[in-house]
Length: 124
Image (cartoon, rainbow, N blue to C red; front, side):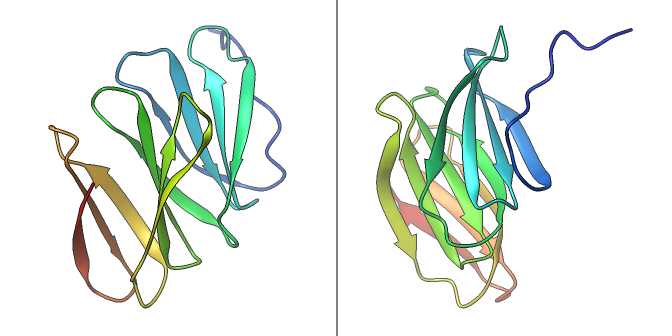
């Protein structure tokens, strides 16, 4: 089998990739400090979300596919508005790298965890 398409554009290692729950978009996290959005059907590049100042380890979509959360080596968690393609909220507070992020099913909370050995729940 051959892949349907190739999504190229990141300048460094791609660490994580996730389909939005509605399947319309794909988000990828990279060591090039960016999160990139792609069309979930065609694979066409949509935009790069920039704001992290170090490697991005993970991304996670909200259940309604409207927002995206990312965790980074820069010790921050960032919430992005996927439709407006911009940073919605910056959640600093970890003492070190943030390796894991996720949304609650109702979209009201974000959870993050990292090298500082702490799991944090954020109200969105």
